[in-house]
Each structure stands twice: as C-alpha cells, then as structure tokens.
Image (tube, rainbow, N blue to C red):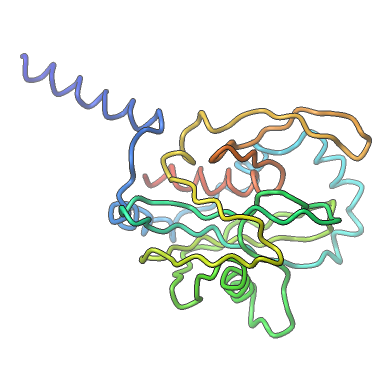
Length: 237
C-alpha cells in the first residue's frame, strides 16, 4: 500500500512540474513525439482565435476586397536542440523601421520571391537569410494554417520544422535586431499567456492576449500562429 501511494504521488509531482513549465524537454524525446503530427488535423482558426486581438474581425471585414490580392509570405516555426540537448524555438526581434511590424517579435520568414519554387522554399530561404540556418539543415514536418494580416495586406503561410543539430545562428543585421531562443518548456507553460495593452489605429488602448517569452511580449498574428503550434504540440507531447 505504501508503494502504491508513493507511485501516485510521484506521478502527480511529475505532472505538476510539467504543467508549471519547469521541466526540460530532451530533444530526442521531442523528435520521437512529433513524428506523429504529420497525420494530425490542424487545430486551425479555433487555436488562432484564442490569441486574436478583439478588433481583428472588424479589420478582416474592412479588408475583404484587398484580401483577394494580398501579398504572399512564408515563415518557419523552427525547433532545435541547444547545446544541452534541450528543445528550443527560434524567434526574431525585428528592427525599428517605418512600418506596421517595426520592433515586433516574429518568426524568421518573409515575402515570396519570383525565384522561389513554392511557399516552403520561401520559408527556408528567408530563414537562412535572417538567422543563418541553411536549408539542408531543416526538416519541414507540416504546413500550418495560413494567416491573413490586415495592416500589411499579407497572407502568411507558416511551416513547422526541426533542425536535428544545434544551429550556428547568424542574424541578418539589416532586418533583425536580435534572436530569441525560447525553451519549449517556457513556450508550453500556460503562465506565458498574458494580457497586454496596445494602441489601435484609432489611438485607443485595448487589451489583447499575448505570450510573454524571454521577457518579450508577442501579440497579434505571431501570437495567433504560435497558439496553433502550441495546441498541435500538446496533442503529441
């Protein structure tokens, strides 16, 4: 009986430790687990809307005509082992410039070029350019749900990929202010979801859902895409 009580207590402790975000996900275990996602149905808009700003529906309605001729872009959600073989996700902090995405956190990626064979090629090329990870080092496992971004009139196509070796990151100084290496445990921790105040085009402050990752506040389209990645991972981890 004592052994039974001990076993239950130990399992609960492990579960609570995982839920609190203080566990470390070994990359080998991560790789084995995510092999299942290729055949999983995407959570889609159900996941994305969890992190949607309250005014998004209004912007979508206003841009219904523009959306049909939206510019195309692709980004990569890239997971990899750090030097301790712990699973991490790479994000970037964009430079401050005159544009709607100035000084924001996002995925490596960018707009489609005429020379790109397809959207996946765009995501891989841009990732190489922005953070220095060569295309041959990335295995793309799944294409995620596209995301329309009204302020810039772009439709962004996210991809889920892994690098089985630790990347030697090199940031593109012209466009990237900094690299943000987020531990998987931190990303999956529900305590990383917060509410933050942002100023709308009407110069009114509104509360929006966001992730707080490595002390960076991530909201808007990136947060919505991250939400789908998170929900997909929680199905297999």
